[in-house]
Length: 106
Image 1 (cartoon, rainbow, N blue to C red):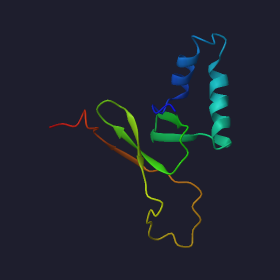
Image 2 (image 1 turned 90 degrees about the vertical axis):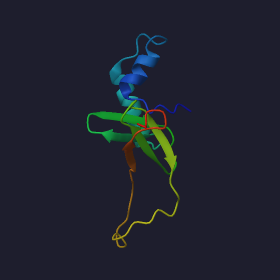
Image 3 (image 1 turned 45 degrees about the vertical axis):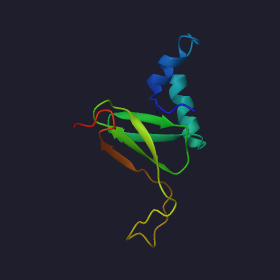
Image 4 (image 1 turned 30 degrees about the horizontal axis):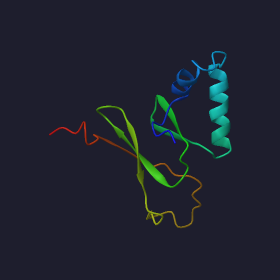
């Protein structure tokens, strides 16, 4: 599974050498369909960047301020949330930002 959390443009650039007739519109429509069918999720850590993830399991994302990499981390199934006892949660997004182990300032 690809763990780079690509944007639609990343996907287009990766596929276009082997599929020259592939349009960006087709890529955007396909990832939109994947999200609708719940075989991919949207990762929207930054306002100006939408990434996609084929791992739909319960997990969070960490974005490095140094290299820009996006990393998965596991979240326990018993995530405690106070104050929403009478609410139904249909989706969640857990994003953290900082520096990865390679970029972390000393």
